Length: 210
Image (tube, rainbow, N blue to C red):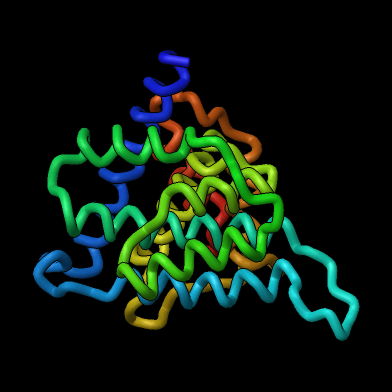
């Protein structure tokens, strides 16, 4: 268990550093800007519920990959919220690693998601316990979260580098949306490699339409 916890702390610390770098890329003063990260969390929760399905009056099927992608987006906001409250990434990483190893009490994804949204609305907080339940109920562990997070974070950087803000960025690459290209790419790479992030960026650069 100690080894697993050590790995979790290392992965979460890396994601925290990447999140800080991404936020700084968008705005050097992102901490002082005091963005409403909690609001982004509950809005994403509502969007995710549609991908999961909740309407009893019509047939719906859960789109698991899309729900997982939304969970990754929420984790971006959750990390940002934690970084707003604590500057020491080691402390945050240890706290989050412990929260993400909690036992899952929920059996209904919708209820776990509502707990996550409620904490964001009522306490302006990121609830690691309900987030863990959401992940578990979507067959997602920390290793999968890490793989998808690093991929999405790197894509966000790539977008900024290739004109996302100026409107010159190309989102459809040879018939595929960039998110789809990313999904194919990260499954072909070794997530345990020290240069995993740089390999993702290189793969995106090689695939980007010239």
